[in-house]
Length: 600
Image (cartoon, rainbow, N blue to C red; front, side, top):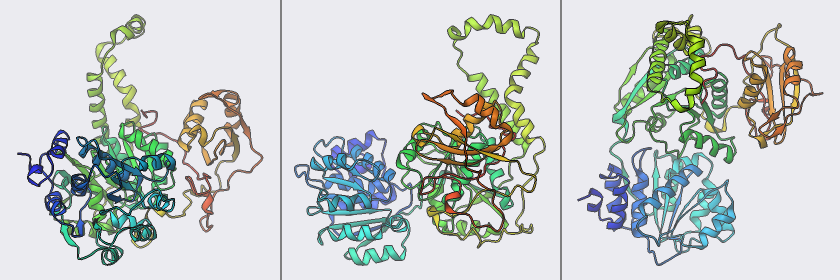
């Protein structure tokens, strides 16, 4: 007998979750489901990412729904669009065999008229983000008079993201006799206030395991000087050719800076942060879920609600201030019985954070040495050999070209031919890591100047980000830049990375120094070293790019000046998309990169 059936769930629901591969409930489900099926007492549940909390409240919600009553009976509130969609998808799967039950997700960034039409039909369970729920209540389209239970999923995050007033307004519209279920990773003061204000003598339940995947996750840390964090990140990617992972940064600005450098250096990556439009966010997640992206750089808030399978690595570019957040992060790998690796990049003064996490959550970190250039080249070489060995050969397509190829290469022996093919792919790694130094440090080493925590490490602004300009002063001998206008913009899906790629492709070189970039809706401005301006304009102006005839002209505006060390920068000049839609920031010269031209 299926273990879920023993909890008292209907056979239709048990059969549905059996097809999903669920055989045994998680600890939080074992404790929560029987209570919700038999009691109307309020409930507070403490559960981390990966503990199965959606099933803990979702399965009882489906079980208790009256199909014949088309009004909303359960309201589930959650912090992000992604989590809203994921919960709705899970509940629809749970209710697959009960056709009369409607699960309707409502969230910002999508047409409200479509959601209103869905609410008019069967909408017994509504999953909503607070902002859109409040809007629909004001329009009298989301009616809560018949709601029997309200679920606050990731309540701590909703409060952290500034939804306090929205939650107060929504809950004030519900009946005092409803059942309130609050799921949270932490018990903050605001969460405590909510339990006192809106809950009646709630029972408290906690998962015995902080994360069901924890046993399958190997925790390691690299200790380096803070200035070498980015170099470590590149070496992690290069030493794991098949990496599929999340890189967590502390702030929005750091996320943008790291992702920009990572993509500019040719890595198959992108960024996820709060300044992306919903369309941009959806596009990034679509590419990441389909594994067209190997690495996603994100803030904790932006990554909330992401349900990604088969992640091999989670990298903490900076350790979070809250040790429980580390558990959230690491729990995104090592799921479904698979193994995963959680990596922390730390400097000497952060060793205490490692010990604190170990003691609090009874896990063990292993200190490992940052891979050397020789280690990376060795792994890349054998990875290349594996790919060549397993590549599929289409004889029909390649056959007509083989005689000419044989003739061209007949002067090479078998051994020489193999060396040539391997070297064609392998030489750039050899060149890049030829003079790579050992960047490891020990806890006994003297911290580098400016490495003390309290400057940036204690910044808790999270996804709101630091308003810091990422450009560096280049000294008295820096190059002269010219500002150009191009008739491509966000409407043409232009991003800084794609613009730099277009420039490099046009010039047939990766050496052009590109400066500040400002992308508008239908056009963009960018600064580029004066020495290549005429060549770029001659080659690109008048050419067709994705169906658009390119107009490239020298602008009358002066190039964005380089920053000085003491100058405070305007918010509009920081790299990345600001609220006004401008882009800025000086990128580094391309140089040699082992990943150059290896994007998928």
